Figure 1 (cartoon, helix red, strand yellow):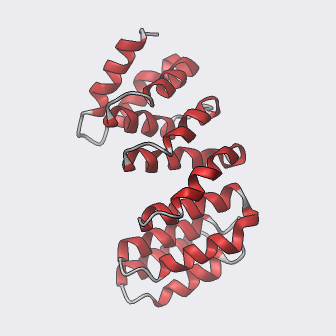
Figure 2 (cartoon, rainbow, N blue to C red; figure 1 turned 180 degrees about the vertical axis):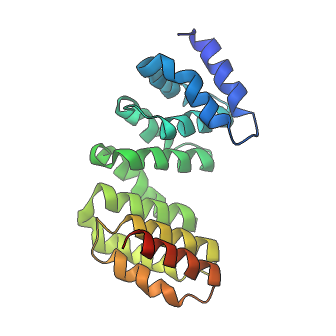
Length: 197
C-alpha cells in the first residue's frame, strides 16, 4: 500500500470532489488493500481536514469487509469538533452496536445538546446498543414526533422504523405518526410501516 502521506493525499482528492460517485470510487480504489486500507482510514480520522475525516467515515460506512478493528477510532470521532463528522461516525457505530458499549458515554452527552437531530440519533443508537434504556430513549423519540420541524419528524419516523426489533413501543409510536399534519411525513411513515410489515 502507499505510504501514509500519499494515502491521505489520495483520500483528500476524493474528499474534495463534489460528485456523488466519489465515495463509491474511493471504496473501489481502496478495496484491493483490504485491512491495511481500513487501518489507514482510522489514521485519516485524525487529519486536520474535516472533509478527509468525513470521507474516511463515509468509506468505512460503505466498506463491505469487517471494520470493527477501527471501532475505537470511530467512537472517538463521536466527539469531533465538526458536526458532520460526528453524525457520520454515528452511522458507522450503528453498524457495530453489539460491540459499541464504549460509545454510550459520548452518546449520553449528545442527549444534553440542543440539536434535535443529534438528540434523536443518539437516543436511537443508545437504544440499539443498550435495549434496557428503552423507556428513557423512547421518551426522546416521542418528543421527535412532535417537533415543529417536519424534517425532524421524518427522521424520527426512519429511526423508529429501525428500532422495531429493539423495542415493542417503537411500532405503535410510528403508527401514531400517521396522523401527522404534514403530507410528506405521513408518506414517510406509510413507507416505513409497509417496509416492515
